Length: 385
Image (cartoon, rainbow, N blue to C red):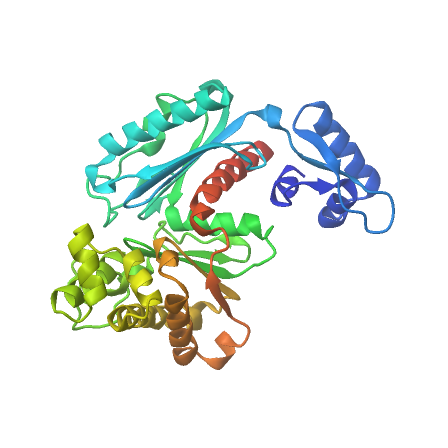
């Protein structure tokens, strides 16, 4: 009952009865009991389907608060949320995951403390903490496992570190899995089989299979950034040649743009390099929107390489949707068009007959929403055992 209410983002008694297959009397009795013990609260009237407007119930704010943290290779987002995932306070700032767990996690704890204080909440009121990191994670013990973008993080216990300050359970997952959870929550689990691709400093994939995030045998499912797209390509930080991450992620786009600026191929990119000292993928997108030929070529080429990689994944998994997120969304529509064209060109007709490919509607909030989903979902699972 609680999980159904959570994933429904609130529901009427009649809606719960239909979803769970319970009788109206059983549903009313369960809801009344959960209201009495403070797990649920009534939050107003739902839209009418013809008769009297039904009362909606959701997880009670009196349960406490959730903390979500989404750590990327170059960014950190932390938020305090209600059990229904309403954001109460949020902070976003640059971060360098290569600085190591000591520096980064100390900052995470400071932000958590400050945001709780901002909400007037205490550590004792925290129900659960969800956190995402940009690398493979052993989900059972909450530890990163040989993460290529995270030197010095291997086997570091994020759970134990946060447990020094919080008695609440801590759940840690790959950042792209959190994005997938965020999309599942937005869609209220209406899609059963889809992919979420994050393109930023690295490239990863969250896999939703039969309505659940699929993590694989050891937590490394979806590490698509190290699929080879050119055996003669540049060496990746993982040690192999031609990984799509080395050729088409954010740093690769910046490198190609810098080369175009230095060679005189693009006056627009050269001016950007001279004025800012560096070129970002977002700068390349801006140059593309101004008609710069070199920027257009870079975006089309990198999009095509990611589409080439995804075509193999689409043929293998046959998802209904592919959502693309991460910093790459700031590049603009040309990148998405290039990815689409490459996937449709290289995939089997049956795999793409009803396939939808789009930027994630949650944009850069997907990981943070997913962190809250992870915290609440796993807490409810524990409560039901």
